[in-house]
Image (cartoon, rainbow over all chains, first blue to last red; front, side, top):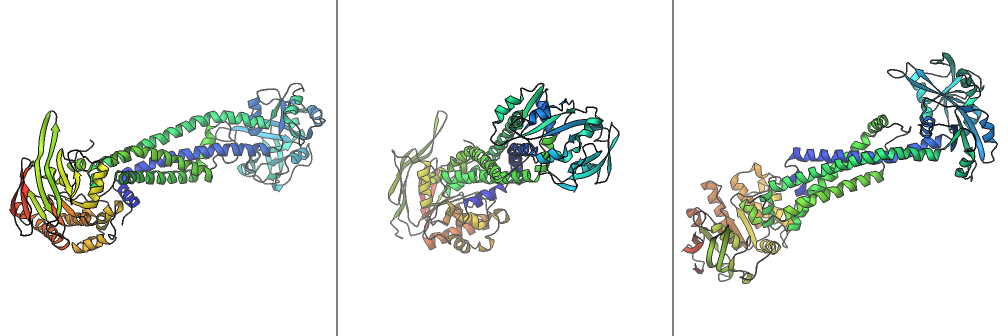
Length: 397
Length: 243
């Protein structure tokens, strides 16, 4: 005996192209939905990872635009402001401070970077304090430079890959025409460190003509310190701004959330359009089978039986489309990642699109709920077909 | 099977169709008795009301007035109209239907079409009825074919098997040979005769074909909504008709 599911399934094979196109519509909307939800989840996770990887919770910078300061720290940037090195002592003596590390950032134009040149970021760091702040950094080759005045460099994993450098090679700092000897290459971290070239802080200060200045002071506070109160205390220092990384995260998330709302709205519209497609397909198929449905009623089908048959068709379309869309999203998450990265002004270094079981379930339930809701009307219409009208061929009454 | 047991009885059955301000009587005061095991044929020109009558008798439609009872149980009377749900319940319990256009589901195989009614409602002991009927109708070898792969005569045999799968008491056949050539038509009538004779199935058949109509036990004619019995063709019936 054939089951209602088999009857519904076989019916979808009747007009294969139509069923296929409807399926594509649902798949695409499921793809968009799951990718966006995955982005929502992934962006925050990666941003957290980036911030945690800095090793410090707070930093002090010369006064300027806080957004610029935040992205500069995370991504590197131009138009840098500098502050006096003496600030290191002032901050380090505070009882709340556990560790500090000064960073001297500089950006130079590299005509060989990309198609039309680009900005290359150099981080002047103090190997001892920087390493203490980031003990999780591992080396693929070599190690930190020993001398603060040496012309030596440590390259991030991707920076070394890009320039095809090994320990012992020389690299040229464009614009300044200074050569550095590569002494270490970091293992992959999945953060912005991968693309950075680290040089001794004193050397960097000398090359850029700012011997007593630094860009940033990274601060790790002691456990149980009230970060907000300490932040207020730091603001008493002249001409500096304090950026807590929790704040940075909040600010970036706020900026991104506007974009997310827009994109999610577009995804919802895409889903609604797909659902209108489902209603149209099922309704057309009901009208085409008007007589057939009437005959089903003469052979014993109750309105609920017909309703169920039509609803199962919707269910099959939505489940298959939803699953296909999710597979598509999983398969193309890397591409989605690249596209989003290209569009966003700032993107953290880790995976931007994270699709987990929970997201998959949420997407499936959403697609199914909207689909089944869409299937209600055609199913109800079909359930109301009277056999006599169907036999007489009075379609659509 | 008792020769005197009434299967369907109607009294002053009327069906009016309203078109604008005009009332068109399709069936006029039809009173008739059909006994269990009868094979009835109804002939008449197009528009004479024979399909309307068979639809009323087969509980596919409510009459405007008059009475219908099935096996002595009143189904319709002047004050009682049945909902679509109630009509369906009576239909699946009592009737099987075959039509001129067969109405098989094109995506289902022969055996799936035949057993489809069991998906919605199944009388006890009908589990293997589908395959038995296909054997009986000589269609077993076609059970896995789709309707598009078999001939018109075979399609009507499949439709008959589908109508019979839930062991109905009465088979309603509306122009069952209308789309078949003479040879296939004769074969279908033979199938109906056999079912009538072997399982005592009551058959009510509407047809244009006088020659085929004469193969029934009793033959009626309809004209302008009225019916009268033309001939008692075989000795088994004691029916009375009044028009």
